Amino acid sequence: MAIEDFPILAGRLRQVQTGKLEVVVDSDNLNIPKFTEIQSSIDFDKYEAANFNPALLPTGAVKPTAFLRGGFQEENIKLADICIVRLKDCGGVVLSVSIAHAVVDGYGFNLFMHRWAEINKKLVADNTATDLGVSNAVCNRSILQKAVPTPQEPCLSVLHNMYIPSSYLSRLFAWVSPGIRGTIFDSIHAFADISISCFHVSRETLDQLRQSVKKNSSTNLRISDNDVLMAAITIAYAQSILKHESERTNTGLASWLKSAFLGSSSKNPKNFVTAEAADIRHRIPNGNLENYSGNSAISMMVHSPIELLQIPASSEALTQVALGVRKSTNEITSEYIAQSIHEAESESDFVFRPLVHNTFVAERMMVTNLSRFTFYTTDFGWGIPQFVGPANAKFPKFTWFYPAHPSKGGIYIHLNDYSNILQQMQTNSFWTEISDFVY
Image (tube, rainbow, N blue to C red):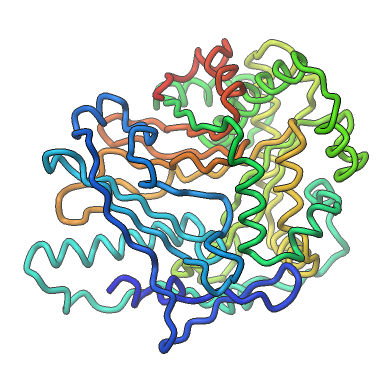
């Protein structure tokens, strides 16, 4: 029933030109999402004692990936993959839901989960869901395209820093089919020691960090939780990366490939780049995109001087980076949005450039902030979730901010990266001072 309200999840991908995809929903040839059930040998108490570490789930229970996959023919790729893991002794279930980013973003994912839970809760209560009405969710991308204004100016100078130069690899990935592209990227990282760690930052610590930034700032700019968290993770992660890089010799085949594919853009960077996904729904005046469930995220780039990040963390450094985040956030105007989407649609390899750089360039990180989403009001009829978070996506340098359970408060920071980098994070003095290790 929920799929009826989100028919795009039963659609089939079709590559219409290099780097461009469309989703075709044919009622006579639906691409039904994959649905599986797995029995776990651990009970709820053991899973809870491990802080809901996804590593304890059975093999095959969770198969997240940063890329579309499912075969070399794009029309065979499932756009949604759902797995229910039943814990031992009927102690509960773990619901694993993976939906292609090509059709939804975090906002759209949240809309789908709430609709699914709403229907199921009604069925649990009285075995009928006939009076729920129709969902307001809209997945037609033309709604977004009509709302986004036409660029009115030459490319804004602030956007130049966002445009990563094209490379052989980014153009190659734009040329091949989504299935081949996903297979290549998954193969690159299949044998890499990539895992996921979770840290908790309390509400009290967040407030203290915000007050510290405000105290050290000479401006009257509003400082948000996101500004502070982005600054904190940038400092700690950059220090961990730089320490790791200084302890190894960057020579051999990997160094040659990096230089050959990326050119001079990867040599001796002066800035550490933190890229954050920014939702444009509420940033376009009169856009009326509240019910749009498709992907409406663009990139916001924060450039922090590496010289600043190499010194021990201080309240002054935190303030400078946080103000940089706030400045980048304030620059996401209607014109910025218009030019960002225009560039993304005109350059076939645009969206693949950051992925290539993220693979080869150490001084980069991608962040998605989902901490404002109402995950803990998603009730399928048996109460709210005890924990919500991502699994190991097997792709490095990805960070997610998730809300913690209402009884705990604060925010969970999930970091997907190589194990040696995660070990550096776990011993970083600044990071251990402001966060607690979860798993």
